[in-house]
Length: 237
Image (cartoon, rainbow, N blue to C red; front, side, top):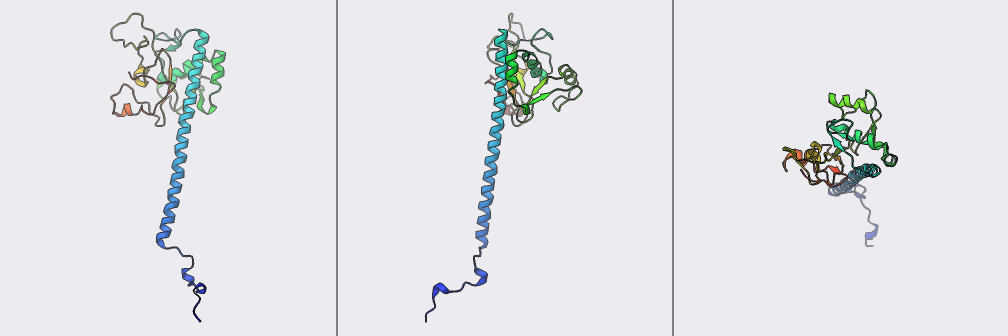
């Protein structure tokens, strides 16, 4: 009687066995899919951080615009403390705090500021210096802003401002005048030239490094500016 090929017994050692090559291929596919998933997740998280930071900058910009509308004038910048809204000699990291302290007195601007995600808001406390306040001058000035706010980006770095200088009435030697008729400030040389006498809010971006817009293209300080995020597009000095 011919042997029924359908009834042949498969040796026990060969039942459902995978070859080494098949196992390596299967493992490779799993590793690829896991890597693809992690990469996609990281990309989504990065985009979310950028979008959250942009939203924060837009709220800051809107609050300033509302204050200026109510005051019927732009935020001023000058060399004499207490005369202008922003003192030119203020420690750089505290300029945004001084500005927010000023505009928060206006009800509509204050309401807009409360819409900022609390996770991005830091309140200065007496005698407590956050990581970004480390120079003696900054620590001394911080004492003036107990209860004042620092606004952070998604990477925990304070938001800075690139602010236009005072309107130049009588040009003098050594003063750089921007297209909007204001004196170019230190912040503008570093973070970008503000347009139309409007303050621009700036995030250092994912690398947490500001760099310098006035640096030579291709150098490290200039490249560090490439991931900076702005409340509006600024010009290079």
